[in-house]
Image (cartoon, rainbow, N blue to C red; front, side, top):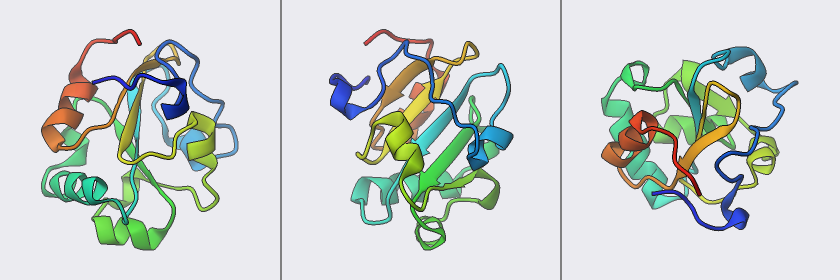
Length: 137
């Protein structure tokens, strides 16, 4: 399930980006596993995944999940709950994680390094990534 090439984003084992000055800097769990999911309202796979997320409680996922999109309208169209929204109007989070593909998820381990990453196409795939032990690229 992991992404192969470095052009697809940061590799497993690399330190997660310094997010100082972003909304995420103040909301992400400290010294705990967490994840960020990149979505786009124009992406059919993102729409399917967001619809599935919207019908389930994001709070009940095995790993805290934050969702990054480029506009509030995109969040509204995708049905992403407010507390889990990460607005990146200039693509700053995508640049930090070196990814533009959607949907893409990065799982950050309690050591602050990328523990896993993937391109989930369904809620079941997303949940498996969030619940899985760390993998190697």
